[in-house]
Length: 465
Image (cartoon, rainbow, N blue to C red; front, side, top):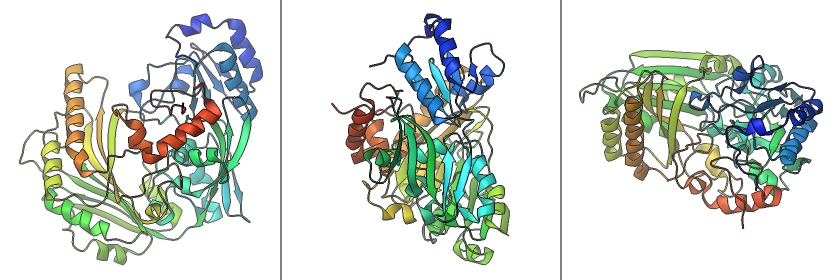
C-alpha cells in the first residue's frame, strides 16, 4: 500500500522525476515558489491551507490525468484530485501531487437525448453559463465555485432535489481514470458506476466527465425571509408549513447563534428557497407562519431565479457536522436546539443550525439503488461554525467543544447518518454514517479497482479483505 509521505518528501523526489512529469503534461506543472502556486493550492476551507503539495499537475485531458496517476505509482507519491477544492475536510489537499483538473471545464449539451456532458473540472458557474440557452436544468448547487465532480459523486443536494432527486440520480455515465491509469466509461450496468453515484469523490479514481440527464425549466418564485423575534414560535410553524409543502418547493432554514450569551436573546430565523409555482401559492404554503421582519419574494424565469439564490462565498475557516431527520423536530428537540444556540461562546464569524428540506423524489428510490443511501428522511440538519485565523486558540477550543456537544445533543433526534459531501473529520464511524448498509459493497468495489489504495485520505473507503 502506498504510504503517506512526510512533509519533506519533495526533497526526496528528484528534479529529474519532476521534469519527466512536466514532459507528460501540456498544462503546467506548478512547484513551490512558482507564480500562482499558493493561489492554486489554496482550498475553500482555509483550515487546510497550510497543507501544500510538492507539485500541482494542471491536467487538460484524461490522458494527462492518467499520466499523472502513473507517475505517482512509479515514484511512490501520494496524490489528491482537485476540481473545485471545496472538500469540507480538506481531502483535496495533499503533501504529494495535486492533480488539478480545473482546466477541463467544458460542457456539451445533447438536445436529442436531453443530456449534458460535464468535464471533470467544471464548476457550478460553468453550468450556469451553459444550461440557460438549452431551457433545461439538473439538480445543482448555488455556489458557483463548487466542482461538479465532487457535487455529483457525493450525492448532490440543491433546491431541485425534492422534485428531481439528488444530483447523482440524474447521472447517466461517467469517465473515470482508475489506479491502473486506464480510462473507463461506466454506466448503469457497472458496479463502479453504482459506486460513483454517492460513493464520494476521490475514492475510486479521478472522474474526467459526467453525462447527466436534464429536465425542462419552468418559472419559479424565489424568496428570502427573516424573523428576529418569537424565534421558537416562528421556527416551529415554519417547519410544519414547509414539511407539508409539495415537492416543487425547495428550502433552507437557518437559526443563527446569538452573539451574546443571554437566555432572553432571540435567535434569528432565516429562510431561503424556490417554489415551482406562483407567489400566491407560496403565500398559501406559508400562511400559518407569522409575518417576517424582512421579506423578498420574486416570480422569475428559472435561471434568473438562480441568480437571486446564488451564494458565492469566499474561502473561509469552518467546520460543519450533519445528520438527517425523518420529520420535524418535536418540542424537546426544539428546546434543546435553542438552548445550545444561546450557549454559543462566540467567534469573529458566526455559528448556526441549518436545515435543508429533503424527501420527495429522493425517497422514491431504494436505499441500495445507488451508493447514496440517505433515502428515508425529510431534512438534512447541520451545525455550522466559522472563525477567523485571528481568533485565539483557547476560544476556538471552546467553540469546537460547543459544536461537538451541540451535535451529540441533537444526534438522538436524527437518523445517525451524515451527508458525505459535508465531510466531517470529527466522525468516528464515518463509514456507517455516510454510506450505511452500502458501505460493504463500496468496499468490494474499492478492492476491485484500487486494492493498494492509491486513492487514500483520512476517510477513504478501504478495500474489502
